[in-house]
View (cartoon, one colour):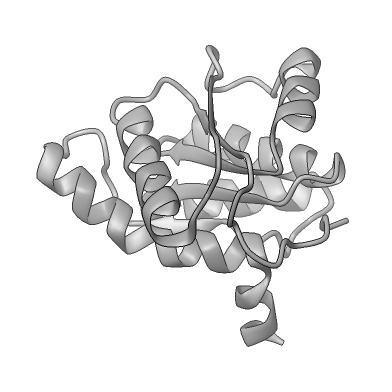
Length: 164
């Protein structure tokens, strides 16, 4: 099940779910700033998943469902955290929250395998260049700029329309 997409991000509460991997919070913060500046996103709701390889705890899922209109999950840049990020995205979608999950290209196979395992072999996670852990501040800004359009497309459904 894919949750209904939003028409725009203007005024919405955007969840930024980071997984404690190096530079994940920085990339999500940069993406959040761009979503505010370029899309008129409302409140940024920052959450940290402390165990990057484990499923999203029920209390955090409920927290995100209560406090967010959409969620961006990242950054999957290892095998276990990529798989967990995709599983979290699918769980959030099943809870009715449009979600964009960011994984690095080195772990597409792991991410795809988890999506299939969760019954969503077609789950459209976003792919960015690997690695992200070694990026300096300017690299983080560039990477966020490269991702923000895809994130908006994923959350609003325009990416799904182009694929159809």
